[in-house]
Amino acid sequence: MNKNVYVHDNFLLQNTYAQELYHNYSADQPIIDYHNHLPPKEIAEDRKFDNITQVWLAGDHYKWRAMRTLGVDEKYITGDASDKEKFMAWAKTVPHTLRNPLYHWTHLELKRYFGIDELLNEESGERIYEEVNRQLQQPENSCRGLLKKMNVETVCTTEDPTDTLQYHQQIAKEDIGIKVSTAFRPDKAVLIDAEGFNEYLDKLAKVAEMEIDSYEDLQNALRKRIDYFDANGCKLCDHGLNYVSFEKYTEEEIAGIFRKKREGEDISNLEAEKFKTAILLFLGENYHGKGWVQQFHLGALRNNNKRMLRQLGPDTGWDSIADYSQAENLSGFLDTLDGKDKLPKTILYNLNPSDNEIFATMIGNFNDGSVKGKVQLGSGWWFLDQKDGMERQMNALSNMGLISCFIGMLTDSRSFLSFPRHEYFRRVLCNLFGKEMESGELPNDMELVGKTIADISYHNAKEYFSF
Image (tube, rainbow, N blue to C red; front, side, top):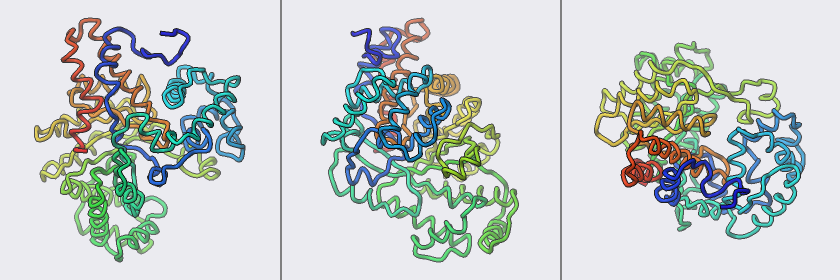
C-alpha cells in the first residue's frame, strides 16, 4: 500500500478486523439509495456534463457554506463567475476543510469516479479540473454511467404530488440496469400556514382534474395522486417537517379551518396544528393501505438568513439544526395510527443529535413483531451524515434497539457524485464493529459479525423496501 495515497484501501479502517469486515462483507454489496433528490430528467436523458463544476458544485450547500466561511465572494459560489473560476475557488477552499467531512468526501469522490489520488488544492486545481473534464466526455461518465460505476442497484428520487412522473415513465420503458423509483412528497399540501398554500392547491386541483373547495376535496385529490404514484411503482413517501404535529380535533373543525383558509381568512397557530395533524393521519392511513414506507425528516431550522433568502431564494445554504420538542407529538401521532392498525413501515430521521436517544427509544414503542425493523431510526442525516454523527446514531440504535435490523445509508443528495458516501458509511460502520472485536466487546466470530455488516450494508434495505 502506498502510504502517500490519502484514500487508500484501508482508509478509515483502523485494525485488521475492520479491514476484513469491510473488504469481505460490505465493499462489494450493491447500493440501494432509497432517498435522494436526483433529477429524474437527467437520468431519463442520460445527461453528460460539460465539466466538474456542473456535476459537483451546482446545488451543493455543504461546499457553498464552507466557501462562504473562508470568505469566498458569492460571485464564485452561486454568482456569474465561470465554471472554471468556481471550481478554482473550491480548490482553494479544500485545504481549509481539514476535519470537516468535506475533506473526506472530496477525495473519495475524485478517487472513485476519476481515479485521482492527488490532493485537491489551489496548485493542483487546474490539472484536476482539466483531467476530470476530459473524463466526463467519455460515454461511461454520463449520469447512468456514474451510477453504475458505484454499483447502484436502486435510486429513489423525491417528487411532489403534482409531478407527472413523465421521466420515471420514460426510464421504466428502458432497461438501463438500475431501478429508478420515486417517493411521494406532499409537504405543500400539509403546511397550511406556509406562504402559497392556496396557490399550490389550485395547481394540485388542475393535476387531479377536480375542484378543491373543501377538505373532503383535498383528501380525494391526494388519494388520486397516491393512486397515480402507486401505479407508477412508488413505494415510499417522505415528509420534511420541523416536527410532527399532533393536536386533538374534530372533522367538523378541520372542514371549517380548511374553508377559512381557502376563503383567504387568517387561521391561528392552533388551527394550523390541528389541520396538519388531521392531514398527516389521513395520509398515513392511505400509505398503509398501499403498503408504502413513510419517512419523516424532522428538526431543521430553515432559511435563517432572511437577507440572503431574499437575494438567492430558499435551499441555498442558510439552514441549521433546530431544537424543537419532538417526543410527545411523535408518540401521539404514531400511537393513533397504530391504534387503528394502520401504521405503515416508518423511518424517523432526526437532525438534532440530542434527539438520537429519543428517536431510538420511540421506534421500539411501535415495533410490534409484525415486520422486522418496522419502525426505523434513520441514518445520520444532513449535518449528521459524517463520521461522528453516524457513530452517534449507530451507538444510540445499538444501545436502545437492534442495529442488526438497521436499513443503512442513503445520500439525500442532488449530485451524481455523492454515492461514495455509501462507502464512507460502510467504512465507518466496519470500523465501529472492528474496534469492538479487537477490544473483546464483540466476539471474534467473523461469520456472525460479517453477516450483520452485510445486512446493514444491503440486505436489510432490500428486504424492507421489497425492491
